[in-house]
Length: 482
Ligand code: F0G
Image 1 (cartoon, rainbow, N blue to C red):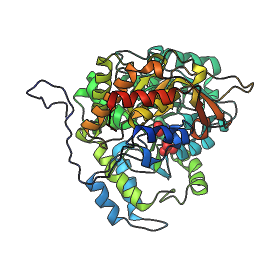
Image 2 (image 1 turned 180 degrees about the vertical axis):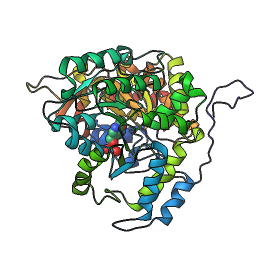
Image 3 (image 1 turned 90 degrees about the vertical axis):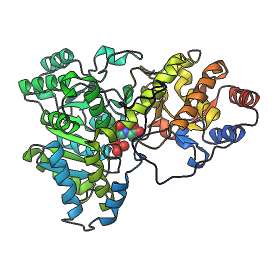
Image 4 (image 1 turned 90 degrees about the horizontal axis):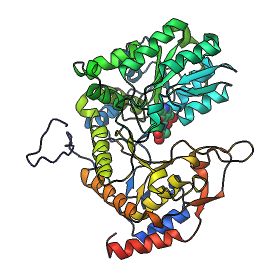
C-alpha cells in the first residue's frame, strides 16, 4: 500500500483488495438525525443502525472478512468435542505464537475473567502500560488493583513519539521493589493501547519488561486484541523489525510472554477469543474455568464457523498487505484533519482516529462531557457514529463527585476494510464543518444515570437548544444536501 506512488504526488492509501459484498447505507436528513440523537438520549450507543451512515463506534466484530474467511466458514466441523475445526485453530495458534496450550473463549473479556480468576488474589497488583475498561473491571472484581505505568510521554495528546504505548521501565522496577514481587499478580502489556488512541509499544520495550519479569520471577501477559496494528507499527517504525517478516516479529513478541490472550472480534477479523499459554500448570488452573463459563474445551463459546474464520484471519494477519489498510486509512484521516488545524491525537495510531475534544470544544467544562457533546454534534452534522472516551466513560467517586478523565476523546473507529476513501473524505469534511461551527456546540447533562457503565446505558439532554441551532446552521450552509 505505502509503496505505491501517485504521479500527481498525492499521498493516499491504495486498497489492495476489491469489495465483492456490499451493504446498502442510507443517510437520513439533518432534521431526522436531530430527532434520532434526541431519542437516543444523546448517547451514540443507543442510536439505531438504520439511522447511522458511517458507524465508527468500534472496530470490534465489524471488520470486513476476506473471501477466504467466508469460504472457510462453509466447511466447519460441528461437534461438541474433538472438532477438526478446533484442531485447525489450535494448530494455527501454535504455529504463530509458539505456545503449547490454548483455551478458547467467547470473546476478549471472557479471557480476562478466566485469567483474573486464576491469577489475581485479593491485595495483589497488576502493573500494565494502560488499562482497558473490561480488563480493569475483572482485576478489581477479584480483589486486585491496576497500576498504569505508561511512560509520561504516552499521555501527551500531540506527539511524535512512535511508541506511546511503552511502559515506563523504571516505574515498573520501582513498583516491584516497593511492593515485593509476591504482591504482583502478573505484568500486563496491551498491544495497540486502546484507551490512549491505539498506540503501539516497541519490541525493545517488551524485551525490557521481560528482563524485569525474569529478574523477579513474574509472569508477563500480552493482550493481543489490537496486535495487528502494533505489528504494522513495529515493522514501520522500529529499526530492528524492518528486516523481519510480520511472522517473525509475532514469534519474537510471543517468545517474550507467558500468556497471549485476545479478542478475535479485533485480532483475526472474526468473533470469539482465546488464551495461549506456555505453562501446563497455568493451563490446568484455567481449564476448568473455561468449561464452567464458556463451554467445552474444543469450542469455548465460539461457533465452529467463527473458529474457521478466525484460523484464516490469523494467517492473514501475518500478511503485511492485509494489516496495513487500517493504520494507513487512519493515518490519512488524522493527517488531513491535523493539516486543517483540527486537534487530533498524534501520531496516528491503530483502531481509529481520535479527536481531542478538550481542545475542539475547549469552552465546554469537563462536567458537561465535552467528548460526549462532540459525539452527538458529529452525528447531527454527518450521521457519523463515534464513541465518547472521556469523563462520561468514567465512574463517579463514592461521594458522588465526578472523576474527570485525563483525556476527552471522540474515538472514530476505522473498522478494517469497511469504508472507502471517499467515505473517509466525507467524514473529514463534516468534521471540518463542525470545527468551523464549534462555538455552537454546548454541553450535556445526565437525565438518567446508571451507577455502573453509565456510558453504555445512560441518557443525557443538551443544556440548551444548541442542537436545533446546529441543525439550522447545517441547512443554511448545505442547502438541500443530506
Ligand atoms: N482488550 C482490548 C485491548 C480491547 O480493545 C477489548 C475490546 C477487549 C480487551 C475486550 O474484548 O470486546 O471481545 O470482550 N474492545 C472493544 C472496543 C470493546 O470497542 O474497543 P471483547
